[in-house]
Amino acid sequence: MNPFSIKISLIILVFNEASIVEDYLSKIPMRPDLEVIIVDGQSDDETVALCEKIELKFKPKIVISPLKGRANQLNFGASLAIGEILCFLHLDSQLPSNYFTQIEELLSRPQAIAGAFSLAIDAPQISFRWLEKLVNWRSRYFSLPYGDQGLFLTTSVFKKMGGFAPMPIMEDYEFVQRLKKQGTIHISQAPVLTSSRRWQKLGILKTTLINQGMILGYYLKIHPEILARWYRSPR
Image 1 (cartoon, rainbow, N blue to C red):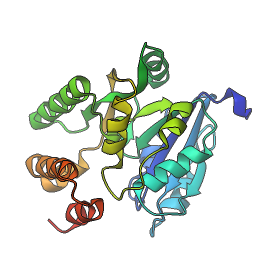
Image 2 (cartoon, rainbow, N blue to C red):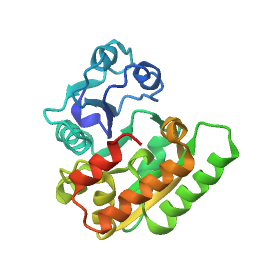
Image 3 (cartoon, helix red, strand yellow):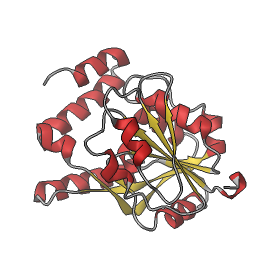
């Protein structure tokens, strides 16, 4: 594959996702000018072996991050990318079919610094429709997309920004805050379809309260290591 033909590098994070990795990776809408980089965070299950079994039309680049942590995975994947544009995607979020044109159109707008997709959740309950509305309202009016919304930006801007801060949590939130100071973050009308599993596990209300607690802790300047321990502790 000619490296100069690569328009977008899609960077997907995985960590101990053996139960879902084959299903989700097989749904990636491939095309010749897309590079797929799967970055494993040192999984201790069969995630990497299963990734290597995936038969995509264009073979993905599968790498293991030398350092644990989502920020390190994101930065490592970006350091290997050859595309003009970087798109960071959670494994359990599926891009819309028109993702390519959406990315190109949004980044071509005046003052655009980055973009992301709206959010749709793959659960039928009406409570998730309200959650989607709240997330999409926050994303558009406060320019605050989260990591599960497929953040994208040019490689040159990413390098200029210095990448994601090496934080154990809130790395996407901190990065978006810095981006907002440099230009406009546009939100596509087209949504990524993300799994409801993290909300189903603890319930929408409890999950939302935990997430808002992390944001409050961030603004209160509580050390990220402490926030990460709170977030990952048994609830």
